[in-house]
Image (cartoon, rainbow, N blue to C red; front, side, top):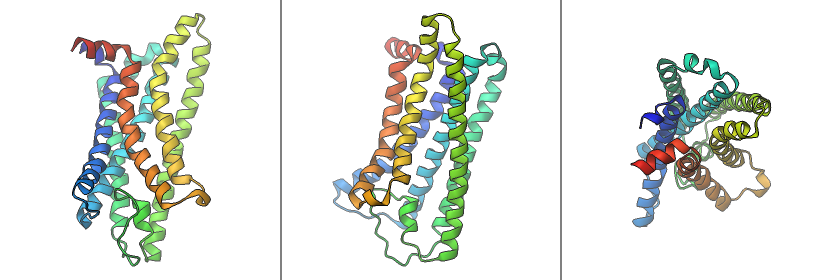
Length: 254
């Protein structure tokens, strides 16, 4: 649809691909194990699952950060939108998001699966999650190296989070300066889907990784893992399709 050839929709397409990748990485194997009453996965399959899940999750957060910048330009600098967000700039930003996700996943997966396991090979999750694999390791030096990689990734993610918060502060200030109430509502409605997706993504990810040890349990860890790996990719297309009028019109026309 010609109305869906905007930079926002270009990045929405890539976001949908990361959502599809997350679902396809974890759910089919879990369904297979459930149907065949088994709980096993090969070592290679586990490494591939950990790599692709981290790859898609990392790329998704990068894309959400870029989409926040897209909303910032559209509302705070509308006259520069066409010059700043050309097709080449969009392609470069999307490529950077995918490349950063690939590099992050490659470093973590290569280091994690080089660790010797001395505490069995049973994971209390429905997919191969790197923090759970680290608990089975007995190599102190490699473990510290992985912790260092996690700290670096955490700092980069925190930087993206600060950028998103700062951008929305500027966006809200610009929206409040719009004289008409209808204009304010229209500007804010273009940000609402992105804000809802980011809030859902971050709230589940933060709770999963930073929940207090006092409330941690195998059943809770499993439930939270299912929630943050399945719920956001499932809800994102629904959130966007319900809030973007051009997308609803295109679906209705099709």
